[in-house]
Amino acid sequence: MARVTPERRRLHWVANYFQLSAGLGALSLAGGLVAAALDVAGSRATLLGHPVAWSLAVATVAGWWYTGHLLHARRREGGWMALLNLVPPLAGWALAGNGGVSATLVLSAAGLVAVLTAWRDLH
Image (cartoon, rainbow, N blue to C red; front, side):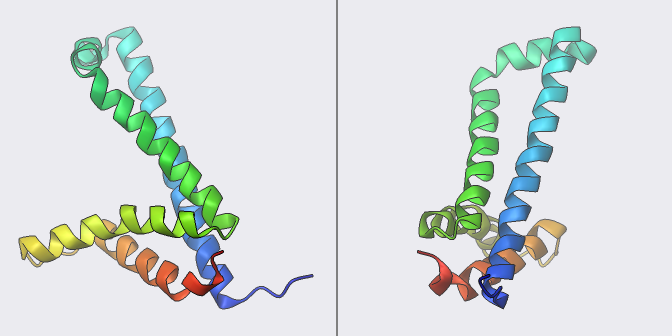
């Protein structure tokens, strides 16, 4: 049995974060579709008025799931995809200079550190 290194644990943490986010995003999308089907609070018009937004949301959820899958497989492509998802919230916060800290920033920073410190474990 292969030894589980701290780097691999960190990668699994980040992979699980992406896959959990994908699962929650899929539930949210499913709820939105059910609401649109039942036309709750005019949600059908919102869905029909913004089909590209819904399509991008589906693509985002699929991308999160695939990023987690690649990180579980220790693939470098997963590391790049994770960086593309984790850096923008931090860059936006740094450029805005508003000083507020949110859960998104904390998770992005922790995920970024985890991926970068485990980079050599990616193939």
